[in-house]
Every structure is written in C-alpha cells, then in structure tokens.
Figure (spheres, rainbow, N blue to C red):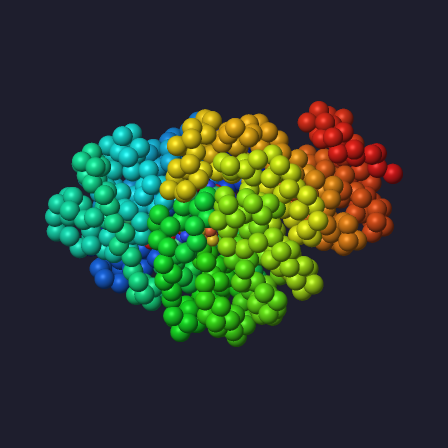
Length: 550
Ligand code: B12
Ligand code: SF4
C-alpha cells in the first residue's frame, strides 16, 4: 500500500514572514511580530486524497506548513529550510516514512519553499517519489527543473486522474515519461507539450478527505475570522467547492491554466449530501465557497441556497461573486440564507480599464447598483480594486478614485496589479519589458510593473493613499452616520496594524459621535502618541489634513 504525504509550503516567503512590510497584517509571537499566514483548507489535496483512496488502498497524511507557522508561539529559525529539516526529523514523520511525497503549490511566493522542501525530503527519504502539483508547477516547470533535480515529476493542471494513474502504474518512471499530464525534466528539455486531464463530472470525486485536516487548527485562519466566521466552535468553518472552471478572460487571472475555461459541476443531489455530511458528521456551521465562478448557472445557485437554508448553515463567499449576476432577487435570496458579507471584485472604477484592459464581464453601473442593493439589504461589502495594470494611465487611476469616492462600499482592498504566470497580463509585461524586479517578488502589495505611464513607487504610494482615503477619510459608514459599523472597520485595521494612526483617529471620531467617552479618550491618546513617534503617519496626517481631535 502506498504511503503518501501531501505537503503544503508556506504561502509567504521567509523574508516577508520575518520582515512583514508596513502595509501587511502582522501577528504577535513571543519573540516579535511576524507576517500573518492564511490557513484555508487545501481543497485540491483533500480532493486528491479522496479520489486516490476511492480506487486504491492508499494511506495519506497532510503536513501544512501554514498551520505550523500560524500556530507557533515563537519562531526562531534562520530560514524555512531549517524549519523543514527540523519538522521532517520529528518522530511522527520519520515513522510514517512516506514512499510518495506530493507538494502542492498554488501561490508564487511558495516557489522557493517548494524547491527547499524537495531538497530536504529528497535527503531524508532518498527512495521516495517526489512530485508536485498546483498552479506554480503547471506554469513554472521550466524554472523548477532548471533549479532543482529533486523532483521526479510535476503535474500539469488538475491531478486526480494523473495521480491515480501514477500510483496504479507498475513502472512509475516509465509512466511519468509517457503521460501527457506529467512533466519531467527530460520532456521539458525536449520541448514537449502537456495536456490537462480533467474529470468532467465532479461527482466522480468522492466527498473531500476533510479528515486530513485538524479542524481546530484551520479555524484560526485570518481569512475566515475576518468574516467573523470560524473563530470558535459555534462558527466552525469548512471550505467547499461545487464547480470548477471559469469561462471569462480577466487579464490578471491564471486559474484557467490549472482548471480550464469550461464549467464543470457537482450535481445538486451530491452537494446536498456533502453539506449534510459536513454539518452532521464534522459539525460544520459555516461553509466557505471557493468556486471560481459560482454564479455560472443561476438556477443551480438558487437550488444551493435552498440547501443551505434547509441545513441552517452560514455561507461565506471569499472569492467574490460575478457582479453581473447579483441582481436584487439573487441578493435577497443570498441574504435570506444568512449571507451578511460579500467580496465584490469591482477591480477598477474606470470603464475603459474594466472593458479594454481587464475584459471584465460587467460595467460600473452594475457595480453601483450591487453596492446600493447590498447596503439596502444589510450586506457588508468589501470591494477589491487593482491599480497599475499595463496600459492603465494616471488619468484612469484618477477616474477610479473619483468613482470609488462616490460608491458606498463598506471597505476597499486596494491591490497593486500583479502579473501571475499564465495570465495575459504576464505575457504583456514580458513582451513589453514592464517588469521592474523579478516577477517572483510580486504579491499584490509590492508593485513590480513599471510602464510608460507610471513607476512602481507611484503605484505603491497611490494604492496606500487610496486605502487611507476610501477606508478612513471618506469612509462611507462614517459619512452615513453608521458609527458602529465604521468603528468595526477601524478596529479591524488596528488589529492588523497596531500603530494604525488613521485607525485610532477615526475610531476616536466614531466613539465621540456615540458618546463612548472612555474609548474616545483612549483612541485619541493612541493617535497623538503615534503621530508624535512616527514621521510616516505624520506625513499622511498632513497630506489628508487631519485636524487635532477635540
Ligand atoms: C481558494 C483560493 C485561495 C484561498 C486558499 C487556497 C488554499 N489553501 O488552497 C485563499 C483565500 C487563502 C487565497 C488567497 C490568495 N489567492 Co487564491 N485562490 C484560490 C482559488 C480560487 C481556489 C483554490 C482551490 O481550492 N482550487 C480547487 C482545487 C480543486 O484545485 P487546486 O487547489 O488547484 O488543486 C488541483 C491542482 O492544482 C492539482 N494539485 C494541487 N496540488 C497538487 C499536488 C500534487 C502532488 C499533484 C499531483 C497535483 C496537485 O490537483 C488538484 C486537484 O485537481 C484559486 C483559483 C483556482 N480555481 O484554483 C485561487 C488562486 C490559487 N489564488 C490566487 C491568488 C493570486 C491569491 C491571492 C494572492 C489573492 C490576493 N489578492 O490576495 C491570495 C494570497 C495567497 C497567499 N499567498 O497568501 C491565484 C494564484 C496565482 C499565483 N501564482 O500566485 C489563483 C490561481 C487565482 C487566480 N486569479 O489566478 N486563495
Ligand atoms: S478572475 Fe474570476 S471571473 Fe475572471 S477569469 Fe479568473 S476566475 Fe474567472
């Protein structure tokens, strides 16, 4: 029987974990502040494990380094490689002695850790087969094989069928060299091309192997707790995916390189069965949908809403829902299923950028209507915005600013455009020589695209200034006198950044309006102390004309 160990590398680079930048969320450990690490359940691996076990007697285990980093009370390693070595030397893993190691790498910042993991596991388990899959191997196999000789093969796109065939093959090396969905060093050197091997009806994959996850550990996830879910037993959250694929061509997206552009679904009967099992056997109270295009078939969405209502579980859509499909009746249905927050990928406030550069399937009037309806219905909205795309001008960014100032979303998340390998934007940046710095360094906070129209410094500065203006100075809840909601947003910002002067200033303002005298005084003092200490905040306070607090 095969013993498979799935390994998830940290989603952040070592440098960003130990030295988070000024605009990143941090967590306090006993020996200082570190970058905050997301810990969503890795559905790809849970699906692979379930599928492999359906056809073969295999043992599987999961080692997710994001969980280790997030749980650690202190962190004293000099590199992630040192951490990997220490963890693999633990008795638990030595005793397990896997014969196949499957590294799952979805995010570019995990690239170097993936190479280190292969090197460490190759040394510790010299006979094991070491393979990797996910968006990074699918798109970066040439770089990977040029840097590492520790991988036996990399999976091209979705892995259920290729991995099953691999464990069933008697001559594994021979199989890897002939399968079109496995990438080897030899094939790469010969310029061979690769092919997806999709499962068309998702019901063929059994119920995800959630048993691989220690549920309590995943409940600490900052991505979920930001939605007020998963923090405690009462909110116990599970990640689910009911479809794969997305037919759209957003210029910054790389999802199609793994999942393709045609929609594939689980049946409604199967969705009911899985959700019921999660609720009854695993104690799920919240379901976090990870579908790329959940709104692809509206009738199906209404049927899923009915199931969720029938089961009495809360829903979270972390990935945003297609705006064009969020008409009033859809929003009402979602609200009736207990939805109280939505991520809206508005992406830009310039119609030109949305249409000509991003190829988004909606326009600004739809975005405005959705935000308005959400407000009416009491659904809190987080709007995602990207600036700094190739072809975008300073005037477009100003148009975005003007539009967003008049939009009433509750909160805005402003990202620096990041060219992902496999996306159209990546190709444009490469062809036109727009990369300033290495594309591996991109993570939405640091700008690396520089064009005839703007510098990276301009985009980073603009993104932060927009964040301060839209979320604090022009905060829509504050404008509408919804002080309690506004205060929650400001306090969230303070939790993410404990010297957030704008957070203190505007929290103090809210408290004053609500006659919370003690809290008002507390935040006012914190603001004054921060401003005295920090020239960073003093400059921004001056730029936005923050007058002294009464
Ligand atoms: C859910 C999700 C998240 C979750 C976490 C996912 C997780 N823990 O698994 C959260 C919310 C944390 C997240 C965050 C972000 N995400 Co995200 N996310 C997704 C999303 C929508 C779904 C992932 C998923 O569950 N897929 C479903 C499963 C079934 O597929 P899978 O995981 O890819 O696994 C399959 C194959 O890859 C393969 N496979 C995977 N592992 C292995 C291992 C082996 C051994 C083998 C053989 C095969 C194999 O087989 C699996 C089964 O078919 C994807 C898009 C997508 N559809 O994939 C984007 C995606 C992965 N995210 C993306 C991005 C950009 C981000 C953010 C940077 C966004 C942001 N602006 O903040 C952040 C930051 C992440 C970080 N570094 O900290 C990009 C990644 C691009 C990149 N190169 O970095 C993607 C591809 C979306 C896109 N627009 O292009 N994300
Ligand atoms: S960003 Fe979302 S809507 Fe656009 S192509 Fe990617 S998955 Fe589809």
